[in-house]
Amino acid sequence: MTAHDMESRIVRYGDLVPCRTAFIDSHTPGSDRKENFTIIGGGVSESVNQHVHIKETPGFNIGAAGQPPKCRNSLHVHRTAEVFFVLSGRWRFFWGSTGTDGEVVLNEGDVINIPTGVFRGFENIGTDYSMIMSILGGNDAGGGVVWAPQVIEEARNHGLVLGRNGVLYDRKKGETLPEGMDPMPTLNDDEMALFPKVGTDEFVPRFVARYWDMMALADCRPAPVIGAEGILKDRPGFTLELVRDGSLNDASYSTDRHEVLMVMRGHWTVQWEDGRTTLAPGDVFAVPPGLSRRLMPAMSGESSLFRVRNTDDEAGPTMDFETAAPLRR
Image (cartoon, rainbow, N blue to C red; front, side):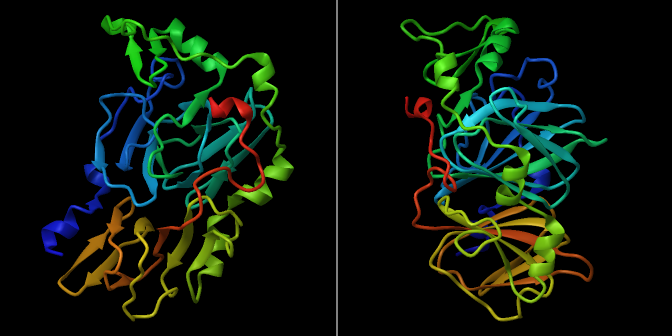
């Protein structure tokens, strides 16, 4: 591949293009200042204005959410896997049909693997604008979000209507549903009762991995985080590893899988036969299958990155939580 071809597979943190009207709660007070980024694949954005940096998907989607302090993402549930790691700041994740079944606070580098069939939301509880990075299962994650009924109702009060086609219409801009298009139906009480309840004590050990635990495990080799051998033993259609300074020797390697590198801390040099590049925190590199490369920390000090690879597993329900009947609509 030419240097231009390789550079087109890198999305630099500083080049990320936000969408501020990506979801139905974009006008709702408390959620109206968030930004959504689609880095690889179309993700689950409901806006026709969402910018997609790399359209070709490797079996999963990569995105990000940026939010100022006290800004939250409203309760929703996914049909496929949703995994986050905290790139910066301090975040509270909460879950359940009303957001009160449980909660956990995540710090920089922590990973949360939220199972399908569980309503979830999150908010920035730090003091600065902060970012979380996401991995969504499957090539096509579109239409993968179901909102809690109260979220849809509140959004309607602030001018946003979600069509059954999964597209947002903003009454404040004079937009209306197309002729013959119904609004997205809300789940009724009986349907909501089908979703599982998971308490904090059950959730956290199974679905949360702490950064410094992963760093300790990655001292001499990459630490498997999600996968059959991972800290979080799940098979959502991709594996996730943490690589740190000292995890790899200087040897080149290749794989027949798609591999996406997502830098957490420090700077990393990626070298291949015809060139090299340096990645900084927040940069994302979609490495093509079969390319022989070397990964090296570019300087002394703490360096870490997450490495995502596609697998042959279906990007369906995570762990042993069955997808609730309302998600099969």
